[in-house]
Image 1 (cartoon, one colour):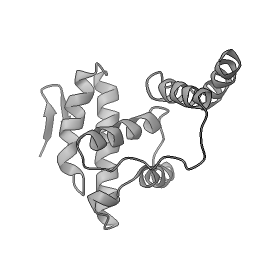
Image 2 (cartoon, helix red, strand yellow; image 1 turned 120 degrees about the horizontal axis):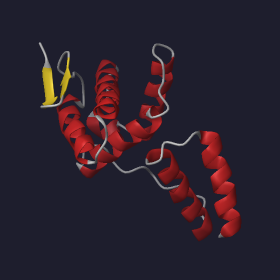
Image 3 (cartoon, one colour; image 1 turned 90 degrees about the vertical axis):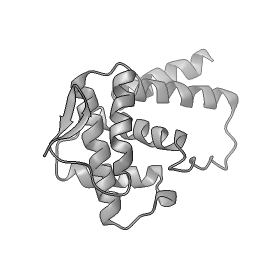
Length: 149
């Protein structure tokens, strides 16, 4: 039985687990953002796997955090090849869920961050999430921008 995301993308079976109802809307949103069919498929598969993993572990929606997604990626890395876009993909899925009120906002660091540090952090997030750059490249760019600012 195929599960339709939209007219361009199908899954072999419907997603299961805690966040299953949000996988299809996330896939539609990703297409609207201009991602290719291949990239949307990777995002949808990752989101569906995360949903199923959460369900098997008995989590509830209010308990889901970025730490759980990191745990899932570590779990997944032992079973499947990790794509360099997987880390930004789950961050996008979590942000999508936050905007929908399914997942609470991440707690802010208690240590005060300077305005320059905040700018550098936002730039790093942009490079990772939107440009999908390698971590070493991101850290090199972050050093340069810190000096510039």
